[in-house]
Amino acid sequence: MTKLLIADDQALLRGGLRAILEAEDDLEVIAEAADGVEAVDETLRTHPDVVLMDIRMPRLDGLEATKRLLAAGSRARVLVITTFDRDEYVYRALRAGAAGFLLKSAPAERLTEAVRTVATGESLLDPVITTRLVEHFLARPDFDPELRARLDGLTPREREILGLLARGLSNAEMGRELFLSDTTIKSHVTRMLSKLGVNSRVQAVVLAYETGLIRPGAG
Image 1 (tube, rainbow, N blue to C red):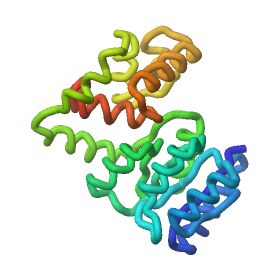
Image 2 (cartoon, rainbow, N blue to C red; image 1 turned 180 degrees about the vertical axis):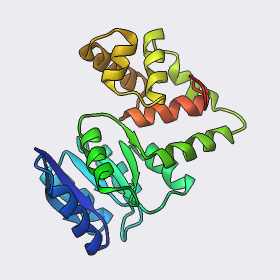
Image 3 (cartoon, one colour; image 1 turned 90 degrees about the horizontal axis):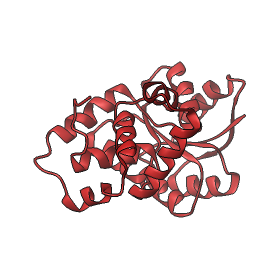
């Protein structure tokens, strides 16, 4: 059973999300939060597997709440669910450590699929968000050399896997493409994240774009 926490300042929306999620046999909502402070407190108290986090909330926004959870050592995966798809929100959410980003306009089946995806340790971006993120990096004139230096410790295989992550491949898909077992793929990904100093696959992909290791449209 995957345990969930819903953080949104609108009670009606929390209720709607709860109804959709709890209709699934393998999903259970164990807590709710009406603002970012409650989201942090309740997550650390109840230890959900996935936090569905709105961005714009009173007292503390979802981006800062996500940062605080990571700083506190929470193992919960954060899936940002929002009506806002502006570039700065997307980019800041990913940099904050969110495991995925989904618009509230997504259909119910997409929501439940997204929750299951991030719960297994995978990353997820709404297709609309992916397009906007790529456009953001296409508009950048140059790349930060200090960030690029963080890639020096990656092996050729780890760089290859990072490129596949940027294409949106799952562990199973990467394994099939590289003729490696799921366990081996997971080991490579874990080492790669550690070397890059990031907490999630999404953050690793953002770093790869930031440094120019991966170019939008490549592969």
